[in-house]
Length: 309
Image (cartoon, rainbow, N blue to C red):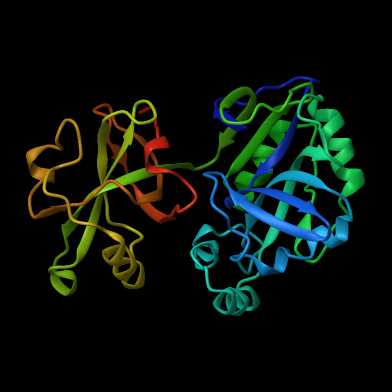
């Protein structure tokens, strides 16, 4: 179940949470084991070995929803740090990175308990069950609910966090789609985009990636629309990693093609890599203003990436 972007709703039937800048996970526990599944259905259990003890700690069969987060030295969620953890499939490497960049699983919903589907219960009831079930551990917690959404938004703005999620207390859990009963209010605008090509850099980056040509779908699976070129925020290590991931394409994947000035010295790639981009706003002609590369999203299917300029 995903939130819809919008203005802050207010009222007695709404509660508010911090919007975590992390990776969404569905967590299945039972018989002392823990299984982690990303939002696009991929098994992420190996990547986060520090979460393996959650099943034994709960001691029940349950399905939970949450976000795994890596924090910076100031205690703020840092998606760049989390990237070091998301792509690891080797258990030994995962353990090494867990020691260097530990994560915390922020649990915010309960979907099943002891074999019973609880998605049809109001959120307020699911929340009470969740709080009774989960005690804070070394790598998991149930973050606080707040009654005053505008005050929380002011606080996260002051802290440089991503935003707030408002949820109706009577909302049922409906998997697989976005709902207006959950509303995300962002301080900084961030969005996933699909990479359709890259432009060569200059100077020390001549012949290498200097900027990414990114796009989105109007509807899932629809034509890929050009949204702009992103160069800021790309470090040398990430450029090398992206270069290894890209598969060259014979034709431009965007429909329609980007403007002529954006197509010079461009290598087209298959639209298979999803990245997250921070930006100031959309321009009148449907381009990103002041975009900055924030990281790769291996937990998002390219065909599902949509945006509304």
